[in-house]
Length: 165
Image (tube, rainbow, N blue to C red; front, side, top):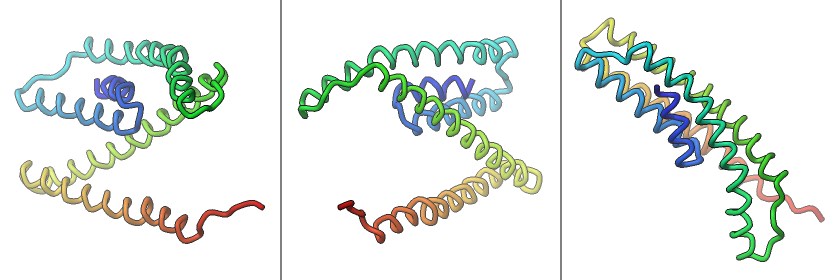
């Protein structure tokens, strides 16, 4: 269910935040159901997994049809040439690959977070485990952002833009 939510939120935002929001929403739904002692049935889970490829296909076809019109409307404003259908197809392929790679990365991170949570859960009460997991994940995210993302941006800024001449 969380992956279907991820696809739908991706569609809404057309950015990686959408997949993350959908995954978090799915996790919260599962957590809420677990708290009240219920689970999603196997039938509903199979239906969600079966629906996901259909949703993706509909989204991709819609993007191929609608995206060039949106782009051309914007390009008229800046005096640029219209895009052709090949541009839309290439964009869809790149976006699809990006979503698959990002989805695999998000899934990997999720497995790690669940592992940390389970490790804490075996050693302390669930409330303390939740706090410990949040602290560890927040620290890890800050380190990744500071060292990987901002570090690379600083490196690019230090090198400057190279003009060919």
